[in-house]
Length: 138
View 1 (cartoon, one colour):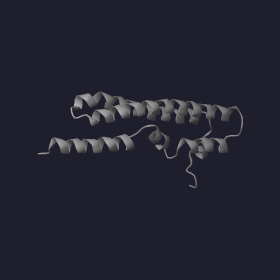
View 2 (spheres, helix red, strand yellow):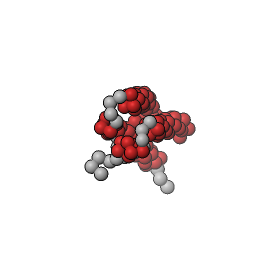
View 3 (spheres, one colour):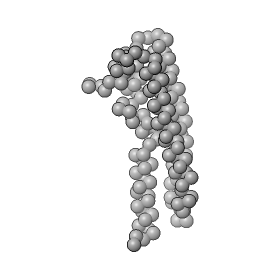
View 4 (cartoon, one colour):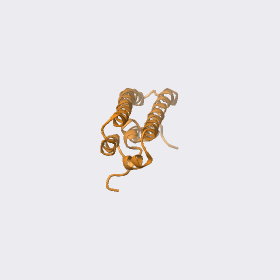
């Protein structure tokens, strides 16, 4: 039988891995092959100056702003989670609402990124899109 102290250590390790590798703004930025900075550079390289490029850059900037707000909220929630984990009397029921909130935010952030990609793809030709999402050097 595993001791409560050992279980707590295992829980902390699992939650730590989830917190640092499980999502958040930085995860959303690179989850689809390339970070947004490369996406922006590709738009600048592929799309000539004008209203089409302005529209694409505006969509990316709006997405980045919203992601920044999500990231700030994630920092607050992660701090609350770590405080809860630091208390000896914390029970699973204390953690579950916050964990659900974090999971929901990660889903929203990923969903927003997918919507950005679809929005950008709708505004360019198939050839332009292929160039924008092509891996650098590949």
